[in-house]
Image 1 (cartoon, protein in one colour):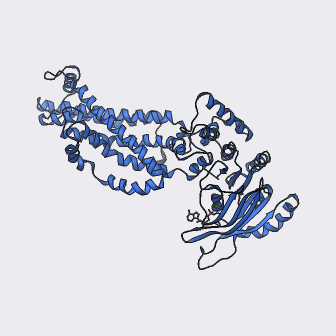
Image 2: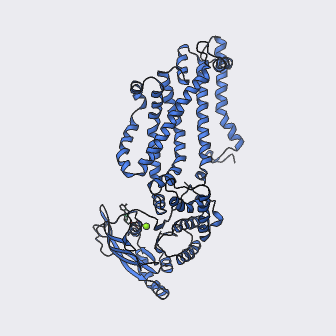
Image 3: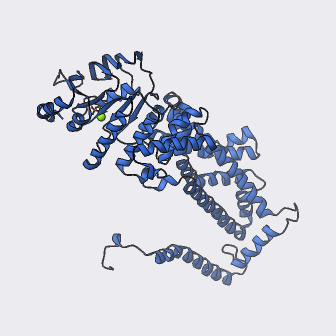
Length: 257
Length: 274
Ligand SMILES: Nc1ncnc2c1ncn2[C@@H]1O[C@H](COP(=O)(O)OP(=O)(O)O)[C@@H](O)[C@H]1O
Ligand SMILES: [Mg+2]
């Protein structure tokens, strides 16, 4: 089943076309890696999927219905930084998604209801390997732990789509490998469609079932903002192609990045 | 060690305490010596009264009922001033918090009110004091309104800027967790704004006292500022000096208590994060 359809999408700012003629159709439970030169509009594309930005033209549908124009619980997000709330400890950060739903007026639960929510949140913390840090504030956690926390926080809402914007870009290589295993496992256990922006091609190939390359087809040297980027390569990745494509694309894309 | 540059040399804990006490001790010593010299030259000198005179005067004001009114003037003055200051600061804080968050968080409100607040904050509060007296009369209200008028714009703009500086990621994240605007305000913005607001309130205490004393000096029948300006006519330094010290102490204690509250209530502030 098609989860997300993007139809002739454009995004323009005052004097700059960022995205043009983006078309895409993504099946449920795909894992789309998005790569492209820095500044070419990957984050902008993700923001449109998220509802943080509104496209200038074109449509995006989720399971056939137009996307809500605000960020909503069906689309989870993990940013490179600032995804977790500094004033809440780990388990409170994760429980927040439950509290907001169950307490519309205060956004906060008390007594037994609160304990129930915290217990549920602890299960998600355990799933990302953070059960030992439930009482720690984000400032007391390492970068990798903060990203695990952000993932647990998003997953408790059981989003249909999970958007990741260079989620592991700031982490050490060893920790990044752990995070790859974690995200693949969580994706495997769920029905989510994942879009992940990365500047690390290898990471994109390793994790994705599909690789989307954003680039400008047309360039006007006198007016850098005149044309936007679009999807120039759209590659299905499976075990066989992953190995072969890697060698070819590596050479081609490294130059652009 | 001692041949290191001065910018690289740090006092230990004990010497830091001594160094901190030093200016106070010097000032006290200078006063006592100066007072002694002047009183020896002229026993009825009023400029630098002896500690004994000051103690006697405060003893009268604090522990003996006034002959005319039956009031204990020192405590009556303190209570009057503290109530004005408390009501004024509490109102200012509440207004600044609600308006500051609304202006900082909601673009339409920001476009509407932000320039207006900026202009409002440029009006010298003391210049409108006569207007306050005309509009609100000479009673308590105009003094409280002066404090509110004096400190709210600063608190409001500081709150607004702080809210605007919260990472957009947090507001987006909260929405993806299902939060509506009200819940974002309550669970993300408010708790992160309160500690900052407490700090701004601490910084505003100085101006708040200034406006209070100014208002009391002009129109009042009680209050710390009123008393100081009343006895000025008689050059009663034995009242003025301890009153000034008492005001300073009160301000210091308020600052200290607010700081403690902030640390206790928001432990996540000082963990090395933001
Ligand atoms: N709010 C905005 N207003 C104007 N230009 C923007 C805005 N957001 C992004 N841009 C521009 O859009 C382009 C793409 O940005 P972005 O999507 O962040 O790139 P990427 O994530 O691929 O590095 C950049 O040139 C950036 O300057
Ligand atoms: Mg980006």
